[in-house]
Image 1 (cartoon, rainbow, N blue to C red):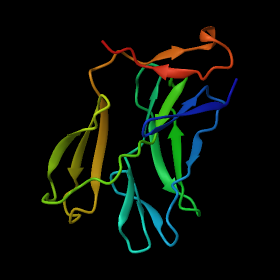
Image 2 (cartoon, helix red, strand yellow):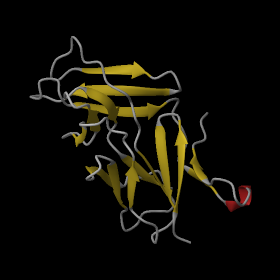
Image 3 (cartoon, rainbow, N blue to C red):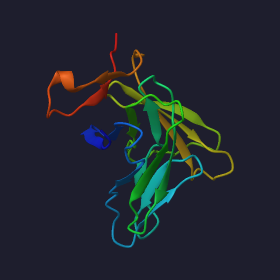
Length: 175
């Protein structure tokens, strides 16, 4: 089978990795302003900066889950075009398909906050973002985790029986 399927849902750019023969590296265009750059922070998130060093876009740390809902190893690197490359390294016992997602969360407002501060933001779409300013960074490194609420059941595979030619996707059944 092999291959992968991509979809954009809100701020999420998802990749569905079909099986163990599928690619494990995925490129995401960051649309960096002329003279700007993309940098991966110590928390694994990525930020796009303009030529003056001002942050213009933030992408939460990457995540990837197999069809049993187990996290898989994943990380970002930046290529020569300043685009984000997400690597996924499935565990030997990973159950396919695997869903991976870099989520753009915009710029996190840290005004009035200090190293070590943690706060939660309602994203207004059934998701919350919990931000944490890493110690010793002068407010320059913010770890952001986006969480879907309410709690959902484990991921389920919506396969070809739902219509050939349609985007197959991982779905969450929320209750």
